[in-house]
Length: 478
Ligand code: 5AD
Ligand code: SF4
View (cartoon, rainbow, N blue to C red):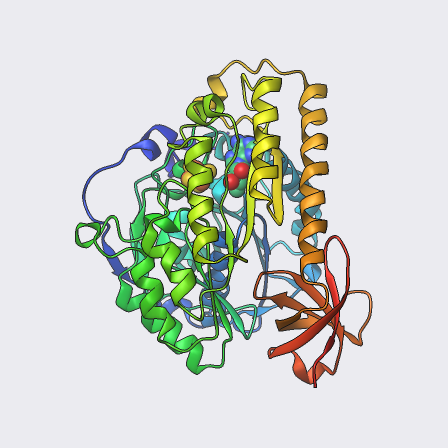
């Protein structure tokens, strides 16, 4: 029988609390005892979910490399395997349970292997209980608020030969000076804020990521300047709700729009930001699209539904009309702005009329793309208690009907770029063909063209010669 009380487990009720105090800023320091622990050993991090998790994995990789560990893609030679998990929908979690089962035999091959679970799933009570009861192959469980303590957890697990379970549910702080091992040499993620205070009724994120807390602008500007000096071409500013940037500091006067204006002066060619909330998107941010050369003309603006009654039950703080008004202001500022969105169908009580409102909104905005989901019940969120009155079959039909309209939007958007010259930041070669380069345009369209590998990491003018629904094909301009 495991002694469950010695572990520090998550608490969803505690995770819901929000206080008015400003988040504390801590500075990361490497523990001397941990510095040599990983020499001669290898690590593998498997990342699931959003770009926030990607950024966290880069931090964990940075910590491990400071300990002497070297990255590997081969799980058979790894001494530490970390699953950085996503809790947003049930199927994301099911994948992880399967993966933990699949990885179990590796522990028999290598008894010293440390298997860890971190990220959003680790913040859930029911997940940690299930691990304690049934998954003794897991040695480390730690949450999103304390990943900077990874070195301590590894030290403890090695020397005490005991599993470590430590998950905080407090609102969270900000840790600066974290080491980072970036996975890409010319595109970088930069966290500008953490957490979310929106509490959309379906969403687990405010519980797993804590309260909204913004990094100091000086720290962000320094990070972007350093990236620029290292030759990076693009930064994506990250937060669960980037439009709330600055609200928790300096009386909320300095917002994302102000930050974009200052970052534009750094000189980095491309700035993107995600994720936005329509209710917090202010005119200063909209103006930044128009006035800042480096702010790319693409905005991902999740709408979730086109029905006012559903939006209200989702606690989204806007109506269909308000969303369309924001879109209108964006299109006035930047007529060719590319807009993408997230939509949930089958939210409890969504009627067919509600769903038709969503289809209507999608057509009116003319999105260039959308991520579409069927509502997934997340334990601990208000919507988990709403009566789920829509048959599964009906939810699937709605998703299919929505995807049809969304895909028409994708195809129409692609056609807009026919015969145009677009600037492409070259990511690498296309999966299908080594002589074909692939990258993203300013409007975030995937573009393939023939060219030399020396162009990888550069911004190239490409004339679009063919358009497909999901990507564009072109030729490099001389
Ligand atoms: N069920 C389905 N989709 C969800 N999302 C967030 N929570 C849920 C849920 N419980 C979607 C939203 C969000 C995106 C990241 O995931 O559309 O914008
Ligand atoms: Fe979740 Fe809503 Fe916060 Fe986005 S804004 S992370 S959907 S609660």
